[in-house]
Amino acid sequence: MAAAAGVSTAAVSQAVNGTGRLAEATRRRVLEAAAELGWSPSASATALRRARTRTLALVVRRPTDVLGTDPHFGELITGLEGELAPRGYGLLLHLVAGMDQESALYERLTAEGRIDGAVLTEARVDDPRPAQLRDLQLPAVLLGAPDPGSPVPGVGLRRQGNGVHEAVDHLMALGHRRVAYVAGPRELVHTRLRLAAFEEALADRGLRPVAVRHTEFTEAAAFAVTEELLALPARPTALVFPNDSMAVCGIGAAQRAGLRVPEELSVIGYDNLPLGRWLHPRLTTVDQQVQRVGAAAARLLLRQCGEDVPPPVLDEVPRLVVRESTGPVPGEKSR
Image (tube, rainbow, N blue to C red):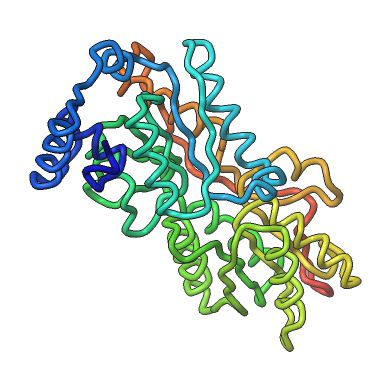
């Protein structure tokens, strides 16, 4: 019937069930096609679609090879499952390549009645997903800070810039003045928030970044951007990365270039993942409590699904965890 009406299967579902926000002309076209074909919805199928699935979707926009090497999502899923599994809920993980694929996936999963809600990852500037899930009448939470007035609540630690300010304070106390910042993709809200905090913290001391580079969250990008920054005429004495995985790659690239960390280059990550404690030197990083954020997101979404669970409490702020990958500028002592 979708082909006869010239619409998607999700549009057919919305027209027949009276859900979503279809244009009236589209709704009429679907119903007319149904009448011409002699089609009517099966009562048992409709009841099945509207039954609770006890399944929540987690859609991640990452290539499969990148997800496999990024322990951030392992920590996030651990936090989510810690709340979902004891209550009989499952997590449906999907990897997508872009926004169009992600949007189509929500349409399909909703039309097929396969999920009760969704966890949205990485808030984006002008993010279309909250409005889409509102129109689909699908409960959802967004990891990060949503745009003001968003129909989907955000989940995360308060004062996202706090950890970045502490990182800059730490580097300044060690005598660093040539600091470069590796930022994530420009469209991510947390990229903009953290970069603004970094530049503000330096400006308070009359300084500017030696360089700022936006890049994707991949191993290849981390190696490439590190090599580029270390080749600058005024080489940075410290690098700040957007996550721990990239910081670890940055340390590897520096060591391959013959630099000692932290004696000749200080490196700071972001996430406080277990791998930062396993390598040598151990990674200085910002703790954003990924597991706790995942658990809070699960609770908030379960409450939207009608479950009687305690409300999530996230009253902490990101804090710097000082380890061994940062040290004084060569020839200087920390103040």
